[in-house]
Amino acid sequence: VQLQASGGGLVQAEGSLRVSCAASGSFLSNYVMGWFRQAPGKEREFVAAISRSGHHTYYADSVKGRFTVSRDNAKNTVYLQMNSLKPEDTAAYYCATATRGWTIPTLTSARNFGSWGQGTQVTVSS
Image 1 (cartoon, one colour):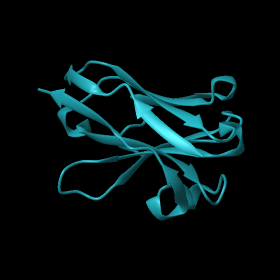
Image 2: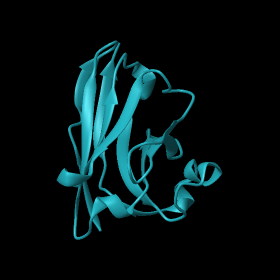
Image 3: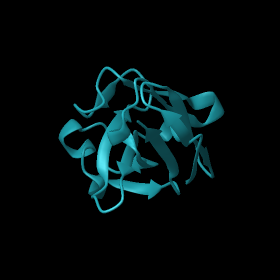
Image 4: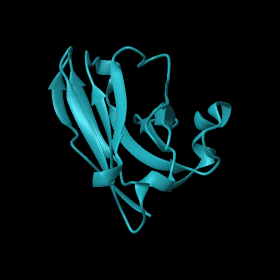
């Protein structure tokens, strides 16, 4: 599966942005999906994950209550709605397919994700 992330940009603090991840080459419904982010000089960190059906979601504490992950399997697309953005949310955001299914302890590690999109930059100004 090939993943293409889009929708990043520059936004002021407390603003909102939605990034998307479109898949090709396979049905996205086959995969548990995750969002990660990476700021310059920092390790890639887990943001959110969503089950194949979309019925289950899981978030990093740092974004819980502000970000919402969703999916539209008919459109082969996963979304990350980001509200109340903070300057510390500035990073490149990546989508990826989980290799170990919906197993929560494994979802927070980038090592358990296989196919990755190219990333979309989100910059939050103060």
